[in-house]
Image (cartoon, rainbow over all chains, first blue to last red):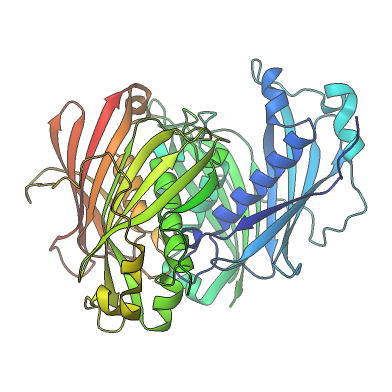
Length: 256
Length: 256
């Protein structure tokens, strides 16, 4: 079989209804475009969900970083380049470049994925899948000039800033609260006035466990500086007061 | 100037992250595609936002109906056809057909729009704009085989089923709560289990007034039958307990 290029390029139009009050794309919708690009890239190359679903396996997003020099605006045509940077037994790293219509770099992304068996929910050896097909697509030379994932530490007794119920629109086809919905709910803790002065420059998010419809989500926040916040999302269910960690996230804002 | 075709056709991929737990597109995301098609169609023909913004005018969505025989699923390629059905002094009607990849009709939409001056917020005469350019695109023969907009009546003292704060992610570039976000918040009143048995067949929504970041939204519900609900969304602001109507909506579900 002939190999496709290692880097896949996907074009997206920034839709006006995906933009915030300042006419820039919401980071959640941008995140969706990155995840779509990952999906297209892996399916086209034979190690995507299309194939994995047929063998009762799936990719699980473990870490996600987006760092933007500039957020695209409504009607802008952007290109998301994506490639597999490295593959290990239980994790693979996939990078992204977000390009403007002139090919200028608007920002970059990094992600780490695990593969699980959907029946046992246990990790599986990525290198064994299709005789290691994915390793033929490793692209380690392409630059991704942003820092690797930053560890986030939030004390379990940090102040809960927001508690929300989960709804129909939060749930994806896996029955889980959608990965980018956490990002949306996290940013919704800030008032509109905040986003008039600041824009989100970088987000690091680590997905620790799934949450489900009916879970209540609690958002613990620790402020690191005027422009940096660490957040832990915890879940509790109807029949218990125990809170379990779902994800943790670091936000870095910059003045506009 | 040569005229373009009266009917515009726009292709969309149903993105996996725009689908609900059952793998069918969320009605809000489908509504976004319809509004995007309207935007593309009117811009291409010279009476869209691109032109209107340059003369301090804008389109305002007044009524919106979507009725679906079948909701498309993830990765399906759909086409949205849209055309102007009629134009009067202060309102124009625009219809939609939502087609599957085989050209089969998945459903239809209807909408009514007003044009306003963005400085005075007053309605303007659509027929005077660009010497009535829009009237050269009226397409009254194309069928749209769904009932016209159904009036919705909800008693002002109907039970408030849900009260929510508005957030950053609700606000669009006009500074208003986004039209389709109301639909999302309305459907979020039902539990996931409801959508396992029922699907939304038709929604009629009338936009009465704008709401803004910081407003609190109240959702009054009157049940008409097992499968039909009338809803009024009201807003209140921090400095008052008075509730004002924002929009009203009729939902018609059917058993799956």
